[in-house]
Image 1: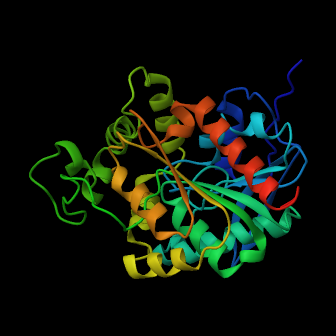
Image 2 (image 1 turned 120 degrees about the vertical axis):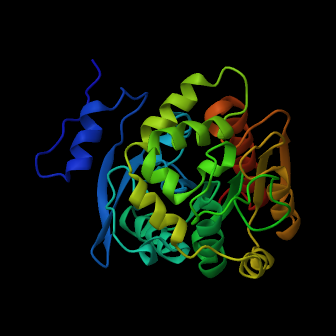
Length: 316
């Protein structure tokens, strides 16, 4: 019998609603909790045991930690696995100021989750915008990071994709294509934006299920919160290059060559900027390869962790 956790009436409304409507899981967490910083709570889950721990970092608040659902049961067989919802989605709080979503706030949440889960050191796996907060933690707290894995990193390196330069703040005369990436359109038709955006994330054929899942996770947030994340302070190119140059831990970049969100050059440039980083390109891969091609991604991460252990005499 599969035991599905029940909503606690004391939980925040968004937390209770998520538990009630959530699909069954391949594996449920061994423990859950919240960290709290400056009055903002972030929800975390811990699965399994074994070292090195693997922490799947939060990504853009357009989705929550279920984006890692294809990785959790596989790695929890041999490792302690930690996930957490970003501010603005899932069971975490939704602060009302853009400053609360700055990359340094997200990085501080990551460290607080590590402390709360007794995770002294971990391999940090990030997706898209999660790359920026992972870089901050790895550079400023290198003793806590045993290795880094980046998937489709959203960093201000390399070349952007054509057509992605539509103004975010202006009222536009068209809603075609990336013109939907616009605060006024988000307020007018949030679901339509999510459907468009995740169709760009999953460019691989037969991705209907992944798109439907991601749109559902996107609806766990709201357009006003998503706008705040866009207004928040991300890292610029100089800051990212400075962080990359200081990375000394083993690093793997996994980049789809058909990434229609950030484009493949971002991941390639990140691998070039980090000393001794390894780059793996997935032919035909889109932006969220861990969801669309989980077997390949899981094996790449597994081999990376095992190689890193071997290089450090059996432990990380």
